[in-house]
Length: 358
Image (tube, one colour):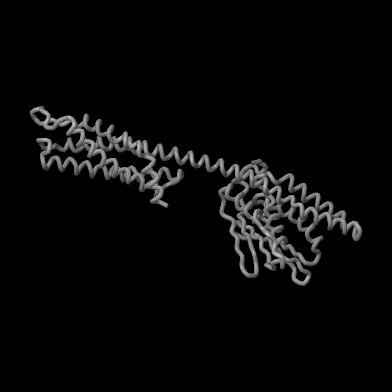
């Protein structure tokens, strides 16, 4: 990946190098316009300019490699301070060494017809450092703007994806099959147990009220989710009176923590959808919190004989919401005996108004 990034940078600065190297060389030629002690020019204008061009090209290319290296080492916007500090320190060291050797070579060979005093060394290095700081600053400004623009585009893409996720979530949660099954159960209860049918209607109303009211919220408290899931599982146990068990063990202090709405409903629904609910072997769904700020939803595996097609939209929905919140990843674990999903619980103080709508 790093080598790909460096190759891309080489392509991106082609015109900057094409224009910058000759310009810096010309400025260096003017500043270091050399004459011998008699005041006469030892070399012509173009000879001196070509020498300056060669020196500038070497200095530019070596420093460019330094900046490319630290871009790949500290690529993100959050690492801007580290990237600038390390790149400029390394670049200054490289520049001092290169210019020092360059002037030393001229001095020892008396290429210009005279020896250089220490002031000339310092002057040469200082001017080279000035050029490097300016050019390096331009490189960094372009890189920073590009990264900021990329991050803005990514944020916009995530926002659009979130809207699509919410839409898919709403379609999935008001599931026609669930509604059909619920109405079928209600029809049977009306004839067999009118009192239980009334309870079922109340629970059904609570479920759909929660679905409609909370789908667009950013976060809700775990206690709200538990209250909702109790109504939801109440409806399920009416359909499966002896084959379904839902066990909720959540620490009291965790109930005020936050999570995306309808998370538990999606996970419970998935468990019932993909597993057989048998009187002889109950489907056990456990919801419990731990001391690491995670909520674990686990069920025993007993796949249906006729496997249902799944696009895993419910689980994808949950994972995407946590990505949008920039929180720890959802952990999914499947063994031969069980399937579990661990979701992070979030502190309310970190997110302000939980009724904020996206």
